[in-house]
Structure formats: structure tokens, C-alpha cells
Image (cartoon, rainbow, N blue to C red; front, side):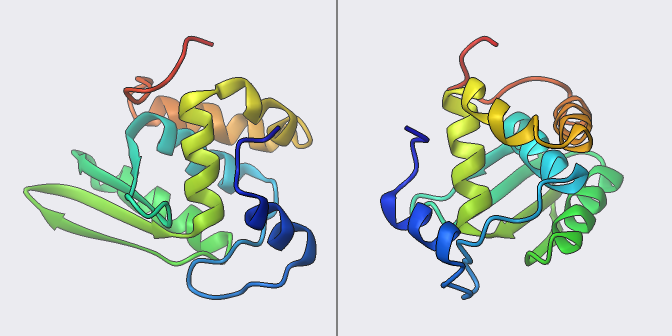
Length: 140
């Protein structure tokens, strides 16, 4: 129903996996919303589905905000400059939430509606990324 792997749901429920690509569901708050919202706008998922990568960011402040929000969630993230700013977040749960949100944004609604600050975070992150959805998004 959620569009994620059964193993991901298992680990969310049991909090059993804590490697560098943790499956634990982060707290639902502004920071999670921001990472997801900015990921919908400017993020892409690696082929193995473990990382969320932002490429060709023109604004260092935007890259810093993404990294700071990820760190507030206890998730590894870093930025670097190569012709433009780039950010990588290494977390399977975040990558899958962004992947699902790009394909079916309505699936995100039950998650973010549990916290009004998460809604604010999604909208802020999405519009900080210029408000344009990724290539596979459907109209909301």
C-alpha cells in the first residue's frame, strides 16, 4: 500500500537496522518535511535506492539547510562543490520516501499530516528548490 519494500516496513516497525543506510523512520517534524520537500524538487535517488543526491544546486545556503536538517534527524549528509553545490544524504528510508513522493505525492499526506511542522517543512523545502517537481511527479 505504501509502495516501499516489505523489509523496509519490517525494520521501521522493529527499529532493528542501524547501519549507515538506516531503515528507522526519522521523527516526523519540520526537518524531515524539509528534506523530503527539497528532495521532491531537486533530489534524485541512486540506482540502489540507498541515497538521496541533490545535484547542481546554485545556492550554498540551500545546500547547508539540507545538510543541517538531515543532521538534526541524526542522518549522515554532506555537501561538496563541483561546478555547483551538491548534497548527499545516506539513508534508505529518506530515499524511499522521496522516491514514493515523486511518483505519488498523495502517499505522503498521511505521514506529514501528523505534524503541522512537517507540512511547513515539505512546502518550504519544495519551494526553496524552486518549486519544480522532479521528472516523474504527477500533478497534485
